[in-house]
Image 1: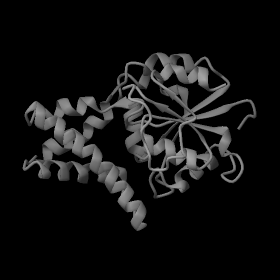
Image 2: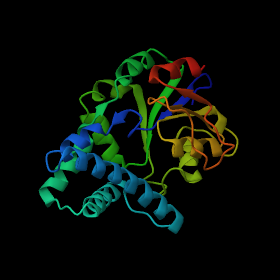
Image 3: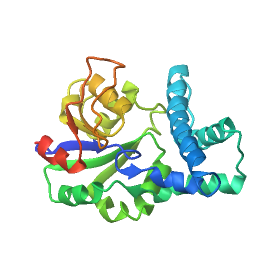
Image 4: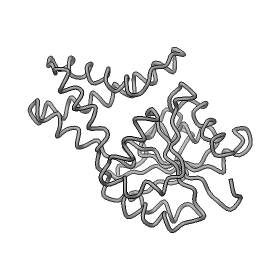
Length: 237
């Protein structure tokens, strides 16, 4: 890694790509209110499954976790989906739209040779690559990202320390002494505190402007909080 370059690792789902369109897909099968509720449960179980597997020392791909958590969310609402509908919903992850502030920010980032941008995700390599390549909004900017780094090799999920150490090694940094040279950009508080606990800088994208409330580790705070993704370019110097 060139000494004058700053590495910025972007979380994908919930940071660059919005899962709001998933609600619309679910709305083809359920009422609007139930679709929203199932979508919320689906996301919650995605995270709970990943964290449970971390704690148990087990691993399942994020693709399988996504499918299993969808089935759980639907069953919890006393509903059913046939296999074709489930496959359709899973494919929707490959064509998610970006948040409104993403495209302009990536356009600006393309003119920042001092920054090395990568995608850094809990998803599988295939899942994340497909999402970046097939998103109508994101694919025109895919060249901005020098690498797509996932947890496949580590077989653990964020916020496990091994995942952030894996990022460091991939970028040519020492996990024991150079974590402070890395920046994470994420809309997910658990990701932010995971990075901060390992000595990384982390910017939390608070688009809802609700303020930092995560108290899992009260002393861990984001390096910076932004309300628009483009503001990261003034934070990272």
